[in-house]
Image (spheres, rainbow, N blue to C red):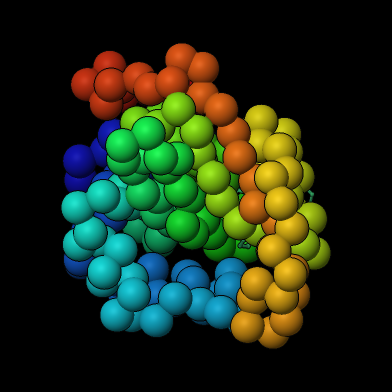
Length: 168
Ligand SMILES: CC(C)(COP(=O)(O)OP(=O)(O)OC[C@H]1O[C@@H](n2cnc3c(N)ncnc32)[C@H](O)[C@@H]1OP(=O)(O)O)[C@@H](O)C(=O)NCCC(=O)NCCS
């Protein structure tokens, strides 16, 4: 099972190629307008600079998924996608995945882009220390604006080896 951590009975694990189909199903549920296609999910999993984690429910369902890219040469790390199945939302899984992934990205700054109208995600990001950087007009395919946000990590990075399995 290779659990990296647990939270309320859910286990945090690294996502691998075996998870592509389940990630695709989750993406379709949480991003009905612009779910990542299978090929892009495979590329996320395989990219050496990406870090991919899933939250697994006690019954084995994939409750959540996050993907981020590490910060290289002083550039910010990026959160690429984050989704929690509606059946498992509001239990702290989004916050937990975000916190874990941020620390694995080894960057002084983390950036992401969120739909201007996505209040759930915007609130999560604002509450966890992200602030607006700029508004990207018609960033999404359907014309909605994106808000680029950034968080400074202090201390900048905690080596992955310092992660001990934790229970909360
Ligand atoms: C955004 C998302 C990942 C949050 O996941 P989650 O597991 O429900 O979030 P958490 O339970 O960790 O919530 C953490 C905080 O975020 C905020 N939040 C989460 N959902 C919210 C909602 N629907 N409305 C308002 N605030 C919300 C709250 O401040 C919450 O803290 P609280 O529960 O103590 O009030 C989830 O709603 C989701 O997958 N949405 C669809 C996909 C998406 O928008 N992804 C982000 C793309 S940028």
